Length: 368
Picture 1: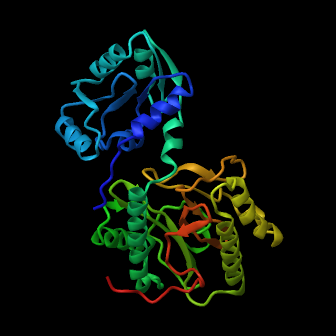
Picture 2: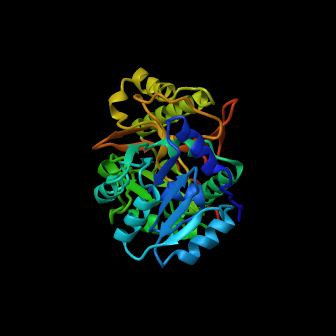
Picture 3: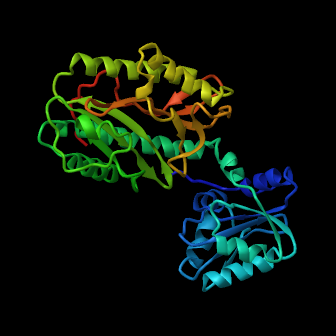
């Protein structure tokens, strides 16, 4: 397994905090804690401070925390154990007593905020760690690429199930089983298998007992989780021979997605990628059927910065890992979405998704 090290990340955060006039921050978001320390437990809060870093957790995770911090190159972080949440809040408040401290206002509970702000000034600094997490290092990219390959192989293997009479849930279950068999820790999210004129028209449909039928469009959105890092991919299929309308929709979505991918490069504004995708649909007078944003960042969270949409105003940077996923949806017709996961480079991008997308006809399955 790829060796991840968090060395230097706390110092990068302190530099970002210094630009805001701060020298310490309470980190509550679990993904941010993992990125900064390597700790994966479900209970904990991390203080990053110019006077020393402290991870506070409970007795279930004390030994795990020390082992994970040592393994990740973060042994300089002190681990403290508190028996109760109230004790944790009291200890944290004492450590930062009398000082101004940054905190994640959208993550920390109201009670936690009140306890820590009784004798301290807390300033919301949501997003500061997320911005540091955007540009992935080579070890992170390797894990994401591994997850993407697993999802691709799993989807390749279930072509024999894309036939009439098989339910959405059966396909989901087989995909998630195959990903684990291939080495994933699990799916990145509940796999989306959406079929027919109603379910496939819902961008985030949940799989049901509905059975595939001839003439259905089928949207499969699947990702694997590997050592905390996610992948994300969508492919769409037609059961039986595509109608002229289904073929037209598929080609439009494919053209839109290729236009979006062509725009991806370091320095490009995210809204320009969204605009490139939408322009194809506008030219075909169907932009009203494109009902979501064009993409999002992927890493320790399945949805993270940067978000590729019409209201976005961020420039891509080398190392961003993002999706490009336009789609068309209409109840009574169904839906088509095509999604790839790419690493942004100075010259453009590297596509981590290798599953074919030239045709809506299912590929012959590959045995795994």
